[in-house]
Length: 263
Image (tube, rainbow, N blue to C red; front, top):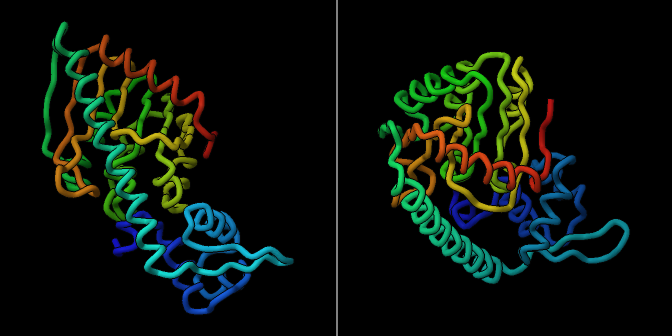
């Protein structure tokens, strides 16, 4: 991960911004050619940078884009990143409070913790076995740490996920906007080449990654306290009441999320 990516830019956004720094004012087509950002993505990338105050757009036909001063851009990214981290801290605290209140009256009938760093053999084996137990449906929330990690770090996990499931499953992936922007075509090819019914939607809300299996068990990623592209392990909670509550929350967010893939 580059320093600008750590401050919140995607690889495409960084490439476009650096190209504009080098060229000065340029059209979207020129930026695409000099940065390597695909033509089909360049307008979304430039519009996103403009919305975040990293580039300015000058009216005309065609429009021309100009990179803002690097010092200004970095200050804006830092402020944005700081706000994001503050929101994430609040969310994790609220999640912890919710889990505590949900578990206190009726402790889970069964639960386990597995050390499972992102992309490790332990993570791949655990995920494959978890998916093989599913009979009807899996609702998956995918955010941190995946959204902060390079594709090759977790590709094997996604392959294990699809390798383990049967063709009669209903699978719904709710991914963060950050992850949706960085997922490569290979990820969507894996999803579409399945016998199971697979849908993907994106949300601007940030959530911890988790899987709800058949409304009876929940596997929750435990983020690493020091590295936002890593986790320390997975907690598997087998409690139908707890899983049902999370399913209701998932379905509520799912209804308002934007479709990305449906088959």
